[in-house]
Amino acid sequence: DLASAEGAEALARAHPDIDILVNNLGIFEPKPFEDIPDADWSRFFDVNVLSGVRLSRQVLPGMKRRNWGRILFISSESGIQIPAEMIHYGMTKSAQIAIARGLAESVAGTGITVNSVLPGPTRSRGVEDFVQTLASESGQSFDEFEKAFFEKVRPTSLIKRFATPEEVASMVVYLCSPLASATTGAALRVDGGTVKSAF
Image 1 (tube, rainbow, N blue to C red):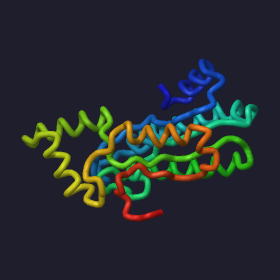
Image 2: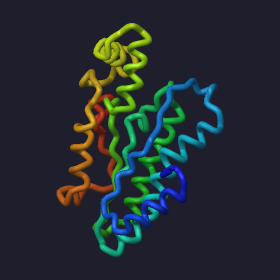
Image 3: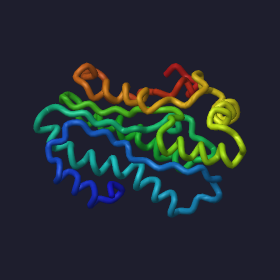
Image 4: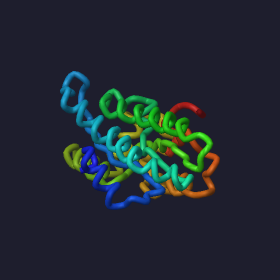
């Protein structure tokens, strides 16, 4: 259970020489703000934020000894454009962006880079299952629901579709490679142009 301190410690013990860490553990759930109990705020923070903080803290000493490492936080465009239907989720994604930048500052001058990746709506397994359920309930196909989603819920998307996990992974692979040694402290978007800003 990587949402717990014990889980992070167990992973670090099992793999003591991690030099690339991709913090990708995350949960989401659309819910009106007034219906989000304190327990959900805490659970989202524990899973989406503290899991990455704890794992990063575990692997950082080894990276410093080797003077090389890559730490990535898989955040979201929701960390910039907080979705009204998932404010608790957006809060955790903003926190990841801040942590990645601060951690990059703390390892300045080393061979360690820290970045956040901000996917837009992505057709991951979890999202695909969630959307398929909603589509079936409304008597639509996946494609029909996807089209309506990007017209009504994410109209700023320039690609008008869900990104694929492979498209997000391409950015992650680049950032983990030696080719990205001058890229650190950055929030890099794979959001299909959903955020209405060039920066």
